[in-house]
Length: 271
Image (cartoon, rainbow, N blue to C red; front, top):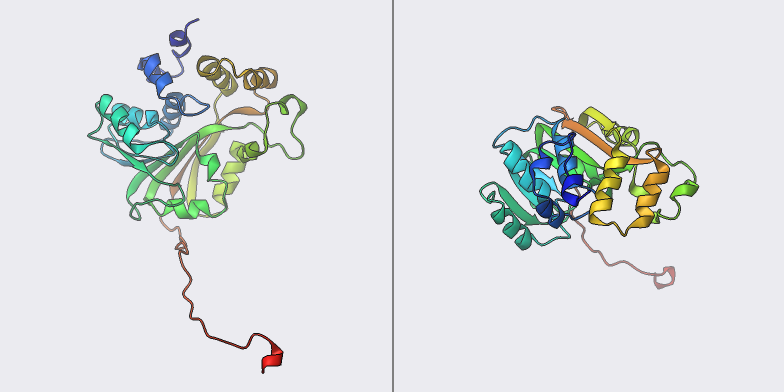
């Protein structure tokens, strides 16, 4: 089966319309960004001219997809990849009228409060969203009632003690950021900031994960074999959607602490 055939899926009809060369050239991570964006968008009411923050957009494939498929305005924001290169990619896709590449850290965003109708994170939220304080920070950029949607690699069940034997060859310490949909639901709910619309997993997500790796990184045998042996017991894709509560109380981030220095004796002997 060719790469083009492997990237055609009845489950993702919108994504299947995109040329496989473009999809592979726009790959910036371990997941097919179009598949995950299409899956996430099914649970979000995206309408033309909404302002959408695509946070951790990588090479902006998800941003192009959102603009073309739903007519939203997208701020394609990423720290690791060049905004200038993303702008050229956006221009080549003829969506530069509605996709605006931004180079920024997810923890230092250059936007006004309540600017966005929606925030989308495709296979990137795990790198910063596990921080207990992060949701309070990010929600400031959402309008009250605005929606936050996340989709990416995760766990089907939590690994509470030690990593299962069949995953140890592939697992590394940084993968501790992977969590289950239930973990993420609790992580968000306890803040009181969002009403959770859903927290679920993609049926047979591990097969889509393995299929993507087989196309873009066929030599990545350790990961592919881990997925084959695991067969969805632990590894797959998770999705969460929540809305900023109208009554949510957000703490202003502390950016500096005012202080005045007053000289005082250092040691008791100097009194």
